[in-house]
Image 1 (cartoon, rainbow, N blue to C red):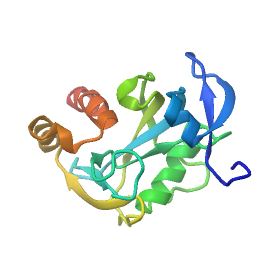
Image 2 (image 1 turned 180 degrees about the horizontal axis):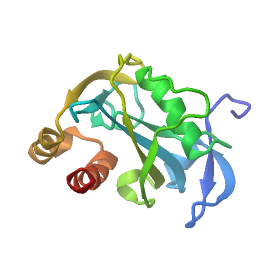
Image 3 (image 1 turned 180 degrees about the vertical axis):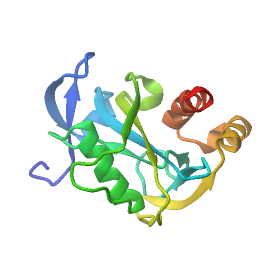
Image 4 (image 1 turned 90 degrees about the vertical axis):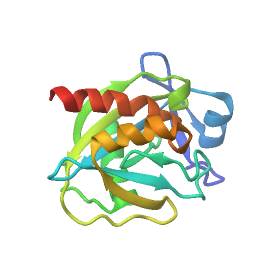
Length: 175
């Protein structure tokens, strides 16, 4: 954190290499490349947990998103961020050193908010405890239903989720 207690992120180049640090405000205001994670949590029946973002969020408030997602803090790696976001947003606490499985990577682009994103996959059948400051509501949804919902009402979904979900759906068909 900076002296003003504002979040700081690692700013990266086109190869996702850290080149400096900047505040969250600066990164978002100027479109600097930075890093994020999305975790798709699936239950035993293959449903995915989706969250409706809190209206308190500065980006995409009230829109549907991945099971959990978030920025990497300055100095944090992708796996650490995935575990931290799972615990903070939906109360899923993994064993020390455990992380969800890295599934695929998305290059920084406008729909991701200029974030390099690692998408993770986790099979989880325990209780979900949503953090109200992060999430307004959450539900388990069959993948085919997610695809139909995104196609039917795309404005209800975060831009990054609309980019990531077809890549998830394609991987679910073949693997």
